[in-house]
Image (tube, rainbow, N blue to C red):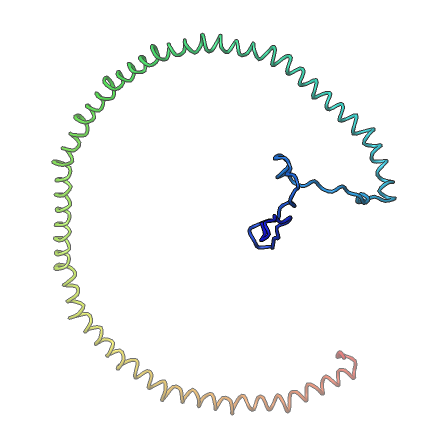
Length: 274
């Protein structure tokens, strides 16, 4: 109410306030089912989208083709579905399914399952227990007993008191024999040969090397450098100046002109080639 005691016709509302505007005063409230219903879309007054000359030209042939081809195929498909459903309903639901269910109840639930359960409970399970008892008490345990007291225990005793001590004794004997043999070889062969090498052979070798160097290598080297090499160089110089140079001069100044003259004479006569 306002200050004059009158009720306002409309409540003002601003965006962001918690109060929403309601219908004007005196307006009857809608029913409960239509109060929260979504408003209906306004009727479309304009032309449909895509309408035009090309749309009209294409639309009617498509509709005719659909009416001639698609609709008969769809009707045939629906007829086949209806026939299949009728066959399933008649032959399976009314005829075969009760027979199968009855056979299952009669053969399995009433006959086979109780018989198999009775056989499993009173025949197979006791037979399996008996076979397991026989295998455990008459086969496995005796074999385990024989293995434990006839194979494992004697093998352990044999290894502990015979084979391992023999192996250790053999190992110690081999080690002692190796040490003795190495000691004997060291004192009998290695050390004498080492002393012989250091005291006799090495000094003799060094002396022979010194003698060979001073008596053979150094004199031969001195003779080569001071006697033989100068004599060879002198002989080579004498040979070059007394034999090679005159022969080369004779060949260049005498024999080669004579040969050329003879070749010209023969060429002129016609005997020699061109």
